[in-house]
Length: 469
Image (tube, one colour):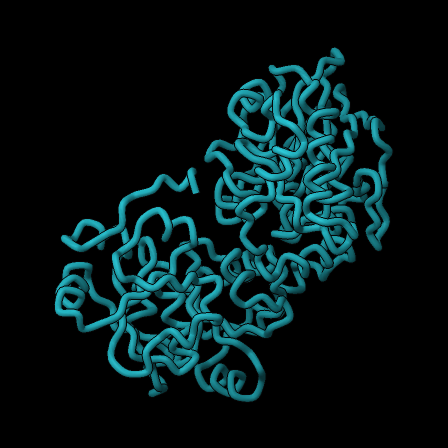
């Protein structure tokens, strides 16, 4: 038996490759499925099953394409209702894979079809659970994503999740391994650990949601307290996972098309395409296509695209570092953005060489920012998340979180320069690009963000541990 966790950091997502005696199961695959097919071929094995723990909201799974290319059936737990062919398993149903067995444990609560797969070894001993978004390390799945489809309140879903954990997962032996669908950084939970694999016994000790003496009322309160609004693209990804989608090969062909500066400019002027620049933020500030939006590949690219652009049907024209074209289009497709229509051939240098207009962002060091702050010459805008800001911030800084930036446009002064910072410099450039696309140009980005500013002799609020918020 071989179990491999295939972890994708920018999505904080874990897919799984399990092989036994020449047969393979894939759990929650990514959109691009060729790596699974090649791996099985290298193992001289056949992909027999594709298990889905639920209808994912934060990424588009590769289940439909993988089934089409391998003939392996897609398996969901009870109550799932996809529009494509799939096995809707019964609670307790077993599936044999080589010498091992998967048992279906219906664990509703995160969503009503949410299912945990219990793996038993060749001796029939419980070995591991693949818990999807039902159980994370340090947390559980948020119960507010399926309210509409389930016609239940988040409190009712949380109560259902409490029952699932107590009746299906907590009775299992402490020595079994927990393989979750996500880790720290995912928007599917609140307080996940950075580790991606653990024993159930340790989770019973460490995970607040598995506290043995917790009442259902306490669980519901803790699980629902402090939930941030889900990213706007989540419902669109659920729809794609439930109804199917275009093959990624077709998406790549359409998007991986180099356009001359003239063709690029014409496409930008004659379509409703958004120009998305995915280079490093340091390159973007030096020069970029006017009114383009920056979201760099080097950060949490796909989640920020999903949250800020939101509409997966939005046509995109891309400015991409040379050699990163396929990567950018693939990562966009992972969150359902299949509408790239081309990229700027030769990049920003070709744009400049063609005599096209460029725009820039003023970006200064933390010490230069301190001089401006000390003189009282500029307002300060902090675009970090709520927890980061509440934990510690510069005295006088206005909180304008990046995910809600459009709601705060009226706060930015029309005259006089103002400073924008995040934690390390990535999100502030995203924010600056959005503001400039809205006609707000009197901004100054602070390099290194709060991480650099906190080292300066500036007034800061008292530190509060984020876990107490």
